[in-house]
Amino acid sequence: MGASSEGASLYELIREDIIEGRLVANERLVVTDLARRHGTSTNPVREALQLLRGEGFVTFLPNRGARVRPIDQDFVRDIYEIGVLIEPALTRWFVNMATGEDIAELERLEGLIEENNFADTFRHSELDTAFHTVMYQRHYNRHAAELWWKHREVLRAVSRRFNFTLARRAAIIREHRELIAHVKAGEANKAAELVSRHVEGSGRHILEQMRARNAARAG
Image 1: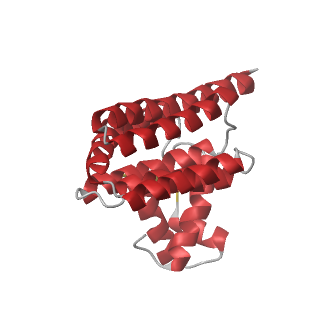
Image 2 (image 1 turned 120 degrees about the horizontal axis):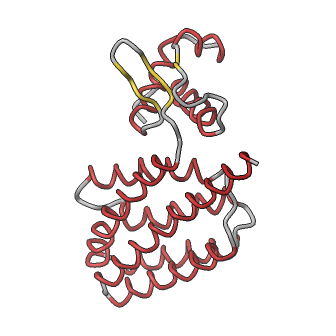
């Protein structure tokens, strides 16, 4: 992550505070205050804020310091729309390069996903990320792959606040199975089209859950 172990730990804590709303949108993040709150020196805090800036959770403005970026519907929409553009290209390359070992690993991970059957949402998230990582981890364009990973982590962190609907659960399983079939058949374009729908469906699901929560809070 490009940070000390203490900086990485603080990054996790501060990110969780942002996602859960304990640090509110546009709140100023004062390094000394955060260091005091977490019982650490200022250097790990600075490291953590730089990591959060890289993920888009924190903004730095001239003469105003670091502030919490609003984790709102526009933020989520922008991220998943970038995924709709990037992931089909990554997938198309993977299908043309996939080995028997790659396919076996996708099948193994999908088996674990279905065995878990969304009972443990954290495990599902880990397995689902591993599934897609198999396809993207060897791509020659490291900038594109790293951008996917960064945005994936943001959406994964935000989505932890919500449960999957039954319709979304069924769609994930169905689309993963179809994707494996396309990879086996060497159907790069069909796989890319499917991934585009898959990413958009995931993004829209998160937005729907955010709207429902906002409506419930508004009474």
